[in-house]
Image (cartoon, rainbow, N blue to C red; front, side):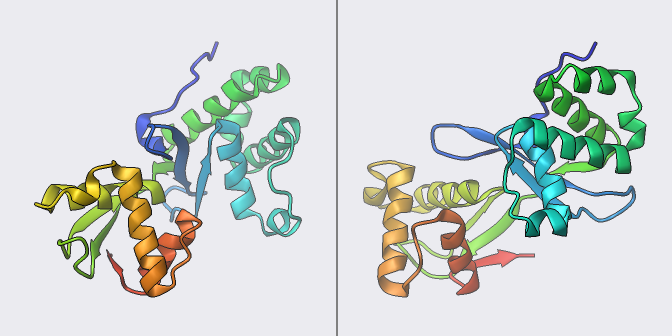
Length: 210
């Protein structure tokens, strides 16, 4: 009986400065093959649904978003049966699906996809700050999620900076002040972290190392 309700830590990324994390990985449909899509969610079923949603043009164009759990499970079940029948034919898969233990069932699928090398952790992205800001620059930093990238930028600045005045109130305040600076002088959108990071990269403020 499968009772595991967790995944390896490398499949989780930080989402805030309180240590909260969400599931995040990349998926490929064949081995060997390229990793095609990123899946990210606070729940294992949501992460699996994200795989299908990101692969399926029809689903994306339908504005399906995130339907009810039972509907997500039906869509994921259909996907696994079509593309990973070696997993769906297992008795334990069938038992968990029919008992509607969707969380454990989802962990079971992720575990099997991982075992067969269809999943991998999100890779690190490496950056450097292209300007001198707060007395330091350029500085190297990295991360696997937007939050991690901005957090590591703050940590790297603190580590390399002899003037710690800007860090008196912690990482979150430091990042907030950096956003305000970029918004004021460069006109960046600082309301959404994803958009803000994209502004930093597109304008060359953050130089990404391939």
